[in-house]
Length: 251
Image 1 (cartoon, rainbow, N blue to C red):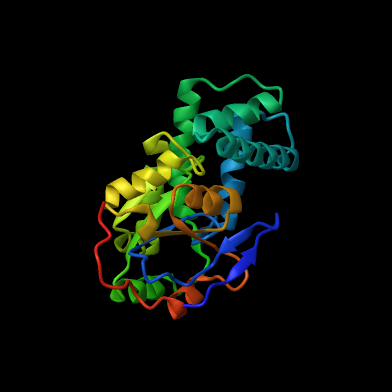
Image 2: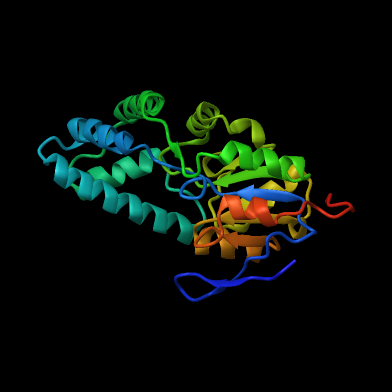
């Protein structure tokens, strides 16, 4: 199997072997690796947040503020290894706008409305052939898992979204940051996948778009990693993945 050395945006070499014969379990990131947001979802959610929290701001100004705070929350989550979840993110937006922090009733209402919007504007598959690609990987003997930092959309909502997309059935193991209390790149979230699947980290390849959270986080926990960018796509992983070699991979 040929070894590919790719460099991410920071020039850090990434092990891009597709795939090592020792790999038994393929662990995927979710957002920007397998799925992206529906264009209508954030627009409608932001409008509801603006109406309840900061109605004096224009929709355009609120959208810019919400986007900036969302990016800041992602940076905080990566730095501290614990996710910034829905309530904290909404509060960050309100405070940045100079508005009162939302009470628990408002937060519960916004979360429920977000759940309803997700039914109307579900996420989209980046590759429409994802179900076929996953089926091919399963046929070759790979187990498939998911490790996701959830942010605003907690694991309960993401399970529904994955079911809507028809890909939930392919994941034997799902690890969501809001459910385990840790976020990528913290080692505990990767360790949880190893424990849940009873697979040694050396036999797991984690695949994601974020160099820091996915690639370096997985590698520091003893896993292999593929940086989902450029020539590394779900399709090329299928084309070059020959299936696990014989042998045990259990912990």
